[in-house]
Image (tube, rainbow, N blue to C red; front, side, top):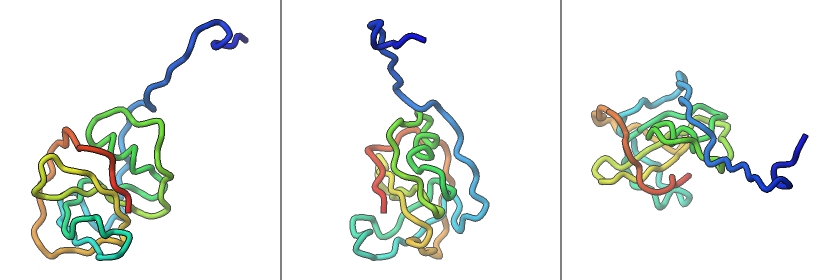
Length: 130
């Protein structure tokens, strides 16, 4: 067995491949729903009302779900997966949309009609986690 570093060859891994986020049948909200964000100190930087882009099942990394959503390769460095259902959210009227990640317990139904989510082609920046 040879060591690639001793032979002068470097193996470079740039991403963790591509995949598909598993469905989350236990999710309270579905893609396109308009939700209100609880006004807590931890979520002070979040907009008060947002649109659900994707429900992320417990134990699955939100970073992978965001990459799958926009069709990019999954990143090698990720945040620890949460033990609860989380959601990838964005503002309804912002262009380009900045992604946010929030727990299900941080969201409330707005009572307003939601949106139809088509293909998400680009999301600016890193996701803010709440």
